[in-house]
Image 1 (cartoon, rainbow, N blue to C red):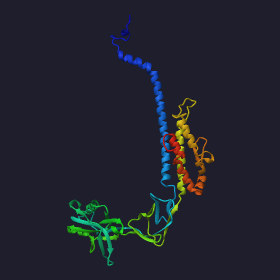
Image 2: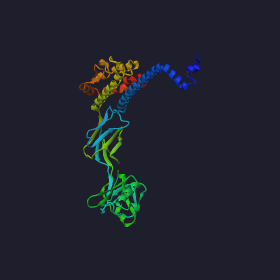
Image 3: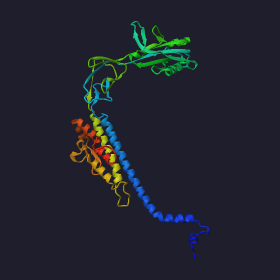
Length: 397
């Protein structure tokens, strides 16, 4: 009688374990294939949903940053940008009162130039230069007085620095306020020193060491360097009040506004006032329509049904959440009540958005405040984009 052992080939050299595994695998194959197909579909749906959510979140975030950051609101503007440029900063107010600015002088830094040396590699002498920042005052006779604002910085000129290039490097390494460079003007190489702007940023140089370093001294009573520019403050008149500042970029005169001074214009006041950027508002709407159309392309591909020719449908074909999202976004342009419809945005037969640029321009010109509020409302709590995000598990309701 044939035993189970004989049937399995025990003692016949057959790999029984492998045979059993093969039989079990064959029996389970159908079920495993079905599970694999189901798992692949689930993964595709999850991936598709994540793709839509990512695109929607990016769109809403970009719009929110422009509206909440004030980029689409009233912005400070200058009546003459060749003299003063006005920019909004944190804390900018929507009710900026017109302000008169007269730029009588720009802030400047002190510049010193040495005599010409044969070349940039010519030795300068070893020793120590001391650089001191402070306030310089002219004596009216070609000289000046000086009051140091802080202790001087020693610049050691060693053997490796004993050249014009080495000296410039040593100065720049020792401190960061005054920058040194070497310029060849055709007659020889010269050391050029430039200090920061502001009347309190003048500087002097003293020397100890080999005689050659005396060529770089600049102090009251001993000026071997030539001053090509002096340190000075910007001088302005703001609504009739004279003020000075050490820099040409000023952010503490008008709350929420930075003034960048371009040139002096004595006797020619410039008005700083709030102004609407109609082009910026229109561009924000255009950008939003482009982004929504890109999102529509993503959702349409994912929601596409299987083709009559047997082609596969999208990963989210028939998905209820995607249908809800599509209805919510369609509401933005639905009839005259759609938020974007008022700005000339409509819906084409394929579900994509169209934009009437002429109507958009008229709407922005007629009601810029309303246009800004409409865009801000889309991402606010209860707004259309916020509700759409909530549908996908994000945003606020």
